[in-house]
Image (cartoon, rainbow, N blue to C red; front, side):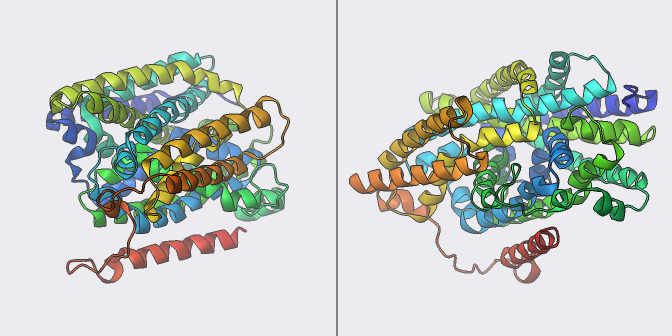
Length: 523
């Protein structure tokens, strides 16, 4: 079935893209004068770039391979993660973005220090660095290795990971966030175009298109809202678990939040967030449903994660395959670059600058480049281990379920409850992470308790919230000067605030309405 052949034309297109991306990184390195320009692109990024960069960073090769693979094995319920992104981004844009941007921080852990204390910052930063390597960068490299194994059978996973990491690392190390965002804009456009082409050629293989899918694929695999007994995505997990994972990923994960922090204003950050939410909605048609259609076209694949590479190699003609491969590699490089840049930002700003405050901006930039190389190496070493898990996308979500609940609780409670303080946050994190280890042992380690992973995050969030409230009430309240700028409050209309369709409120309502219509249709 898998030919393992790539034409000369396709190969030349892919090589040209690689070289062009590396050139952009080296060229844009001339604009990096200090830490602000290297890590936050001088905070002058406009909303289209923010939105496209968010989308491209999220729609990585991990997502392309994982969405199609889960759609093939369990149906379209995996799309719930996609449409929930729009809802989460609306919540973040309305209730939290203004105070985050007003704080003028470099990292989201730094924001936690402003709200609570330094201990919370260092704990969150350390956890994020762990997830950057174990979840974000490593899964991207492994997904790329799956693709290359289809194109060139027998290629060692480690060799592919090294090659991809080096190519991505060059433009990230030299170019900084500006290079990452500029390349992400091109990559987002190419990715949407490439995914649409895959969808088109998949439907060509079906005699009656959508009608063939509805007649041949079991009904439950075409439904977003699943029963409580569903092993893939029970409706209660959709209601209380998946939104927490989405909130962490889109709103507090440094490699996504860095795009908001680089925006030129609150308005541009909000528009960019809503634009990214809008871009997530078509993924049902161009990334999820092709995986479901593959049940008909390729019913006997040995591993679900091979669906997307198989669709590329078996269905796309010469030349078109090269373009789409360039788009897939674009997604891969975009995600890895985002992760590496955010990891270097965390190390430099949350650890080095904290303990060596006298270092110059140029010195911090050099340390950031070294950190990028170190984390790139760690990701390459861990990526081959992901082969031991059943599904790439489930690996991603399960790791997040056991780690992010306590952090999400701190951000949300801290934005709305003035009384939450530093001691409360510290002991809440300790309690939450200890509970996480305990749940992991009894659910995954021993199997003594059967519990879907989507229920783990809300349990941890509730435990953390209780600890935060109890300890905060038992210890002195934070000063008003510390917390007031970081609390949500109803905003008075500004004289220069955009009106009409440019008002983010109307845009948010429209996005939520469109999202609700899609979910209702495929319920």
